[in-house]
Image (tube, rainbow, N blue to C red):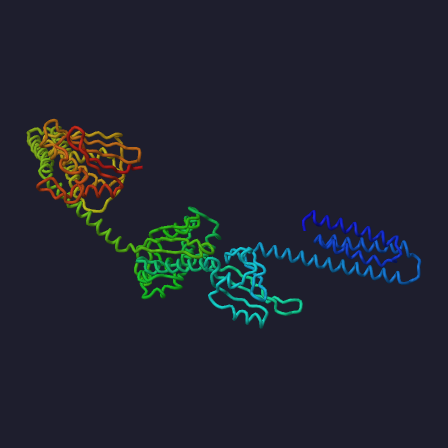
Length: 623
């Protein structure tokens, strides 16, 4: 009842109570009229306030006693006392019943309000299956509003996939039924619910309809279906993948890592310093799912043969760095880590693998770890063979260069040898004189020694260029390297009348490189520049420069003033077997590019703005 409504009822009850009190006080009715106080209690009951009803009952009883005392105090027991007792009993009974009814009504109202707020469906049906109550939860599930549903037959609102008769039969036997129902509501919207049916009974205990409470399972079923589709798709991809993949539980690994109380670089250094702890960590997880590619990789016939086994702990003693890095990066918070390592498979074969470890973000942290392994064994073997072939090819190229320089080398060696012979003859003549001139002999011997060292230096340069073997990276003074290269081709340059100038800035610039390989590149580029300049008009000099750039790289340039690069893209010169020479193999510049890139640099060719071309390459500056 609204606020002004209950105030009106209370006021009216008060006026009636005052009238009854006045009549009872001053009339000869002898307390019989006091029974009318029950009208006041009933009026107060309309306020829907149990406390006001209780207060009214007390006030009415007190008024009846006061009026009785005023008119009958001291009288012997008689009819007046009986009438008072009847009136008080009526007041008490009316107050108690009204209070109980209001309390029950209030509780039912609160329960109805609570049911109205819940997302679960609550439907109340009469014995004819007509809807008498329909909460908001029912509207959410079935689509019908309460004003549309109340009074209508249940079957008009909800179409079930299966009949309700078996549920109603069970309901009649036990008074309740629990199960799932599926069907469609308003506009054919499908639903799946978990339902509890309870039999309603009237005051006589007879069946009087039922209460249906349902929990919507539609979203959960859709999510379950989507999850199954996702899991099936994941499983299909997992099993069909052409690379090895397996799942493990790393919660034990995580617990051990946390007990170490270390992170990042500190954890990695600790594991490297304590290889027994590293192997203990690696041996903790065991495979609980694997694909056939993993079985093939690790040497078992079927993927079931990997279940329960551990594979990442099967690494050589000297190869723990990759796993120490893996554990430390995961402990630092990364969820995807890739490392390259070696593992011994179950057949005892050593494998080079790239491990890609992913923490799946489901369940407890590290409880699902997906590991993918790419077998790099054959690729690494092929790369090693390719590198060996490149070494052989580079050696053959250097020998070819030496063949081209044979005349120059012979001339360079012949000069000190001729000088040695001349000074040796002069020394003998000085010794054969009647009075040997020992000072002159000493001078001849010194010059023989100097020319011998000169010849030895020439032979050393040739032998170094002809050396065969793998790259030996070391700090090299670039000025010395350039000077040695120029000395090797000096006669070729003189014969072609092409002077070579050098400029190294700073003079002490050093690079981290293999001396022989870089000298091979320099000689090759300068020889190409000489050949390109031989047909050009004067001036036709060559300039070899080197400087350091801002990226800790040294740039070496060989600039000529020859005919330039014509008819092709300059970078095409570095393709294998491409040559502009009639007797060329087209491998010199290709080998040069491979050598430079192996050192971490780049090689480039371009035409000059005026004439000629510039070949340049970069090398890392030595620390």
